[in-house]
Length: 628
Figure 1 (cartoon, rainbow, N blue to C red):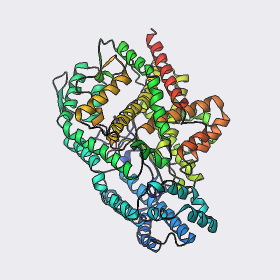
Figure 2: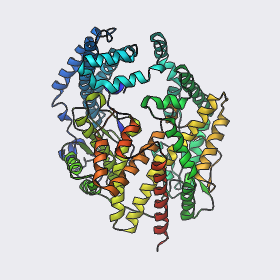
Figure 3: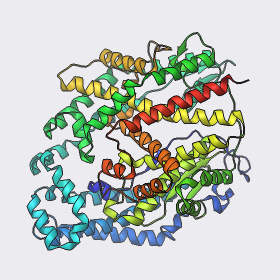
Figure 4: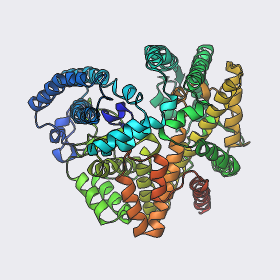
């Protein structure tokens, strides 16, 4: 665990498409309710963190005035075990306060982002957050000046340091890749330069690039946004989809050489930093902080490639169902000839989640129900409210979930997903000391995807109509395709371009496009035709500027699926192991935590299981669609 993890909680976001809400008491003259229109039982209780702003202000002043206390330890961590312990405890205690201040301010802002009061509050805590980061920045560099014998001696002399054993030993494990204090200072000073490729890409992608306009079948001109583009790609007008696709791709062509140079610079940066720190590859450099063997990554890609035909079958089925002679990339989001318009009440979604998650045992369902009724969730969209959905919270608070519930099937799965995150944090915070209360990204999505899988399987077993079963199957297939296969495809592209750079290869726009096109075609099979400008994905994915990041989505869903199936098949022993998994933060390495829960992610089995499941779901959908 790094110090940034010690005083910052992870914000986990699930994107959602927002639609008009089926809630009562809508403000007159507005299509979106005001917050005052919503019953309190559908709002989160942020006052459970601070009852009022005076208490928030008191903690803000306390934290601000306490940062100078770190000065007494700067340069003196190695003087005595007491100094080391006291400094780590000080960091923990102030980080807990910082977390409460930070989360409270941003949750209140997300209630209504137009609020100048909470805009100011978030600005203040963001500035103080930076001050605290600076105040504790000496700790890890000083720890790395200590040798293993000194740390062991300190822990024997001071029993209180035993709590920090894993943290300290993990720091020492990575010591060979840490440079001298002077060299680390140079790298720190180069931080803005190192981050420049990502910043340049963001400016192009978010600020400069305009997707353009298209004319729909009614002759109306549409200024494209990502939301509108997604809606068109899910629509029935194929000619409009084709024009929209061509227009959006053309927008990127205007910046294609800059995008290529920027991504190339990012790859050069990755390889330079890996070499500077003594790693053999960028992959090793990326996986080492969580002590994940590189074989996990390579096994993931190999296993999918060995079983790629199952994804080709899904492409063929889509082409067959749609009745197209040629399937293009702009046909990949079109609904497959069935409709499911059922609207769920929020209470129905709570009930379905409780029933679907019943295999996790009485205690889990009791805590789930407690969360539903205890101010954890902000349910409905209101004017000015933050968009999408996420699970958040602090070490001393209960979890908080932001939703924008509209009664769609996807909202049900979002609730199950976010409650998975929330109960994971709830159990971990009750079991782990603060320093180990976070979760690595490698396992962060497992609890949420396990919840989704259990609820989906419950719905499949209890579907009231063919259309409902098709809708659930479609969601499950899309979940696995998007979170598993697509992320493995992206990861294979990352491996190809990084390896090319590491072997001294030169890159160009043509190289990036051909490499991406070849891998894209391999994954989707010969039944998909990739348009002339639909091979620029390798230059448009923001996550590629965080090397070897996306593979963790694929391993996460594979592990979550494996755990859900073990729970259903094995019952109590698997449930007990899973609850222990939920109660473990970062006090062990991710691979070890998963192995104790019953999933060996270093073997191909969890990945093979996910691939088999995908094939079975495709077969079920094909059989259902063939029925009269």
